[in-house]
Amino acid sequence: MTVFHPYTHISSSEHVIKYREVKKSQINNISDSKQPESLEIDTHIHNTFPPAPPDASLRRNIINDFCDAIKPSKFEEAGCTVCGALTLQTELLI
Image (cartoon, rainbow, N blue to C red):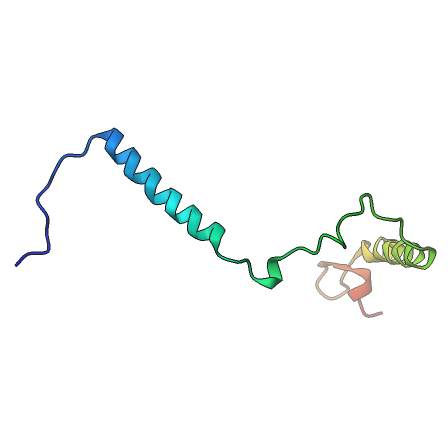
């Protein structure tokens, strides 16, 4: 008994037909399956575009956080007095 089948030459058109049948069955299996709840989109929440502008307190927080992030002290470097390596001034001990 053998598990091998005799070799038969398949034309490219027959190969394409078999390939399409396999892909079509795979697509049908995917579309038939139900999506997990974590991937489902609640259309009631996402149906307004463009979204409303943020309220005043959120805008104030965004602006303050941005200003804190770009302070000169966050970028200024100075040489270490021991080794001379450039280091952020916020990390230097004076």
